Structures are given as C-alpha cells and as structure tokens.
Image 1 (cartoon, helix red, strand yellow):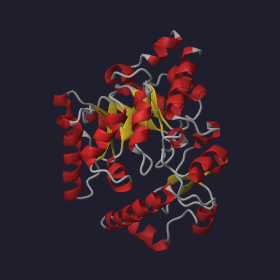
Image 2 (cartoon, rainbow, N blue to C red):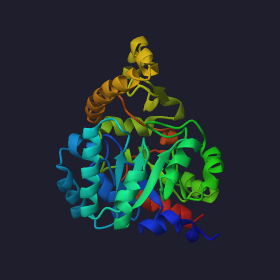
Image 3 (tube, rainbow, N blue to C red):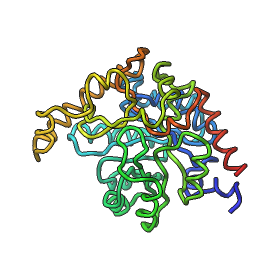
Image 4 (tube, rainbow, N blue to C red):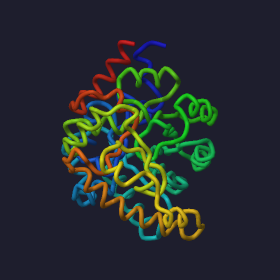
Length: 330
C-alpha cells in the first residue's frame, strides 16, 4: 500500500476530507474556532452542542454559522443520545435538525441506541459513526444502522475504554464497518501506525486542546505538554464512572474514588440515574470552571495518555499538516 493510499480511507471518502483525522467533540474545549481550524486544514472538526451553547455562549444555529464564517469545509456534530429525559431528547432532536439545515452531514453518536439518529439524518445524506468501547456496544451500533464505529481504547481521555487499540481492532474488525482509532494518538507516528494497523482514521482530543485556537487556559495546555503517561489517572469524582484526567494538586486533595453514598446510589437500579444526574450537573459546572483555570493546581483537566507524544502548543492546522506529511513520508 502506497503512503498516499493510506489517507484514502472509507472515512475520508465518505466525508469528503483529505486527512482521515477527527477532532473529537470535547466538553468544554470544542470552541468554534478550533472546530473550524481543523476542518479548514483538511481533516474534520466536530462540534459539541452543550460546549457551543453553555460554555462558549452561542445560540446553537448562530454558533454553527460562526464556524461556517471560518470554513466552508465539512464539519461534524456530536449527539449524546442517552435517554436521560424527554426534555433532553427533544433538545437533541432540535439540534440535529438545525445541524442538517445548516449543512452538517457527519454525526458522532454515543451513550445510547443510534437508530433514531440514523433514521433522521440518512435521508439528507448524513453519515453516522458511533462511539464504542467494546463488542456488545459495537454490535448494537451496527444493528442500529451506523456507517462506522469510533473505537475508544484505554489510552483515551475522558471516558476511556478498557482495551488496547490492537485488541479493539481485532474484536470489532469483523463487523463490516470502518473503524476509527480513538485514544493514545498525540504524535504523527502514532497516526501512521493506526492507519497501518487497519483503522480508517483516528480521533484526537488531547492533541487539539494543546493548540492556539483552543480557548482552554494556558495552564491547561502547558499541563498537557509537560505531562507523561504516568500523570494520567482515572477519577470517579467527575461523573461517577472513571474519567481520565491529569493528576494535579486538586486531584490529589480530592481523591479519585466516589464517596460511599454515591457508590451505593450508583449500584441501585433507580438511584443510579439520580446520582448520574447529580454528577452531570456538577461536572458541567466544574469542567466549565476548569477550562479557564490558570492555576498550576488546576481543577479537572481531562486528557488522555497521548500526552506522551505532545511537546508543544501549535496551531491546529499545523497538527493536521504534520500528521498528513508523516503518512506521505512513511
């Protein structure tokens, strides 16, 4: 396989992009300028609705149009589809409809059955990829009609999976849809390796936080640059399930395990939904606060083990270009 053909994957072809690289949707880091810069460089940025509206203060349609002022190239939208409430489901439906009206055709779903999203966007030419961490969720996604899967491995930031990239590829490779590697890719060489393994692309989050367009604090960005793999720890304190964050004084002081009452509630069939709602409301506030925390002590700074390959804060377009050139020179 020639180096240039490594870039011509099913993901790149379906989305009409030059580099099969996704800037993953991030709460709270997906500001419009970052999403647009990645797409303008030839990859694809994915907007996160709550980040766009609650953190960055845009009315949803106006936020998409702000991105469109900066790029005319394809962008994506993240749909968290867990059935938490009727009101949330209705809001997500509205966001998807507005996205379609504004020309968005790539959708990344997670935390639920993606069938209704597939049915809603396919008549308009929409493409849906579903976040998964293991085979049973992947099978449900494929049964729901998705076009591809984003395989979240144990080196990812945020809600990481429990398996390695190679193991996930072997487990999910027989499902008949393209797979995107998510987790542990901070350096161009790691992108090349993922494509050579058989992945149709890669999704990056942490690498794109450490860019000039991202509005995260310089403290957050420098923590990414200066951290190694051993500085990434899992905490239950943010959402009730393990989330990958950078270890700092705040994390050391608070601890990483949920308290006894929270753990008891999370084990109950009914109470777990209440506890998750409590955690969700708390984490929205905490993560928004941490985005602009310049203190070396920090707060909750989400990041994956890809920090080991990130050594500088550079423009997002330069990230895409370096990854593209690494493939062409491979």
